[in-house]
Length: 334
Length: 135
Ligand SMILES: [Zn+2]
Image (cartoon, rainbow over all chains, first blue to last red; front, side, top):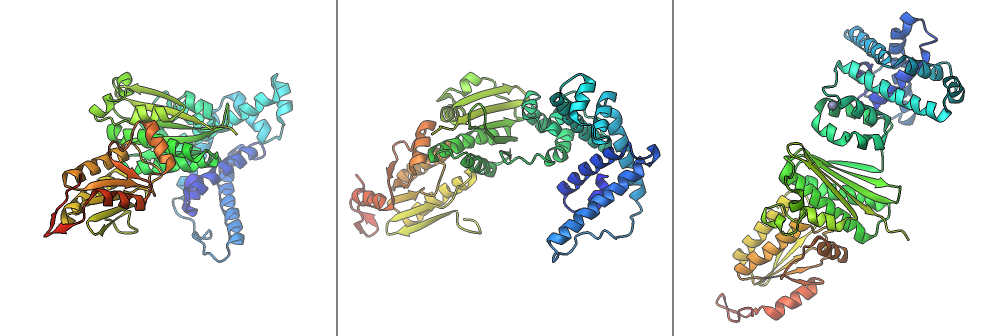
């Protein structure tokens, strides 16, 4: 479905949104349509969704021209694509457990609410809702995997993709999703449609770090985000200075990595900076965190300096895999 | 230095150079700035250099070290350097970071920087030779 939609919509994110929306509609319809009709229905639904989006856009901006002509003749590859989409949807549904599939369909198709489902299953409505969310998250993952005809290369992949798909930040940390995406290309590719959808968080900034200029981008990104929590000017400077130091460490000693800056609401308001790289790792952390050592060995004052600037600082390094620095600055209340 | 709005400017004023950093520089831009400035000190036989960093909202360990290096190189080339315009928050962060400008002289703003240079550098030049060397 994605390719059918993509052929008509220039913007990738929009296309992915449409795919998700279509999936939901198809799911909602499975009980109402004949088994053999599921596939054509999916295709028709995909087209309708695209068409209605364009109608809406046209209402909003009548003066712009259409980027895509929906009345364009059918392209000859469509049948083949349609078959692929059908398979992907069927595969994704197959991958769910019987119980997951039935609960999802009962809710989405028959409109059974979570409370009555909970009564049937001997659990709570909250638990059912949580399970439904997990099922939808899995369905998205399995759909994308089936569409790309890939099996994830490692055992870690599916848990990571699921955590991304469900938008569960705690789980993402538990499975160290950020590091996995740095290391695993297939997951990095799949993470785009998974995270682009519904999770465009305005309380998180991710800055890829490869070269000098990215250091400036990272500290600016951190400052912009921290400004929203109304940190004092001094704290803003302190935070961006610390970010600058850890970003430079990545450029100098690892070559590639990323910095993720996120706002925290609990237990207190603050900002957390995670700097991870896929470099050689730091053999002696104790030493790297000692002032003076660093300057001699070209490490700069980066790590000890950043540690002094922030309220919390933790570093994990593994030879051959890379280093992750996590540091937090709490907002002074009042 | 590059196309587009200038990242830095280096202006000559008598026997001084006034260098202003207009925006955040990345490390390689900072190094280029260092080269340009040292080169111009030689070309103009400057006796004093003012580096205005008022536009910088971060001076990290690399920035501090580069400023110190510039001052030291300038000294070896016979010029005295004053850094002006370090913002209060930047000063705080530099100290917390464990960096500073070391023995490099700093002043609040351009005016005070110039006054300092005037007090230390003789501008009486005869036949291209300075009569009173800086004390
Ligand atoms: Zn993976």
